[in-house]
Amino acid sequence: MTARDNILSRIRAAQGRSGAPDAQERAVVRSYLKAHPPGPRPKSDWEPVAHFSERALTLATTVDRVGAIGDVPQAVARYLEQNNLPRYAVCWPELLELEWPSAGINIEARAARGSDLVGITGAFCAIAETGTLMMLSGPRTPATTSLLPESHIAVVRASRIVRGMEDAWSLLRSEYGAALPRAVNFISGPSRTADIEQTLVLGAHGPYRVHLILVP
Image (cartoon, rainbow, N blue to C red):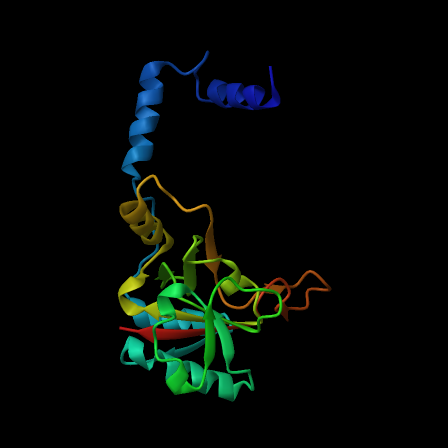
């Protein structure tokens, strides 16, 4: 008997069961997993967009809000100027068609490299309860664009802000079905660690700046 078999046997014994699971037991489990029944959740009687912004700010994220997607390049230019950052960035392909030249920003649509200082992405969705971005890896959404540069700027649509983690996974299942991406990353503010003497350090394993631009 392997260690795994031993552990599972002890669990079944504690449940008052013996032997291997029969077909009926397996069918019940499959049905339960397919239904994805929600578990207990805390009260969430707040407005999602406002709550998401509030939670993001507590995570050392900065937040800006614009009236339309076409306003994003100018908003990015303001942020770069305020933080003395170069007007050069890499972005996801879906954002390349915005009017970056009119904002004085040179931009390339590709995965980030170690020398890139600014990465601009979208997000699959955002989670209001925790101020978190849900990112999916893929050819047109390379993970390095949000993970390698020192500054990560994310364009977040208000219509893609969900209340909780459960809603984010439900949205993913409804839009992707069984064809899930290779990786799902959750970003809750700048990278941080307190491994050394419990002193919080930003940017330890990724960007030390995260800036969100909310669009309708």
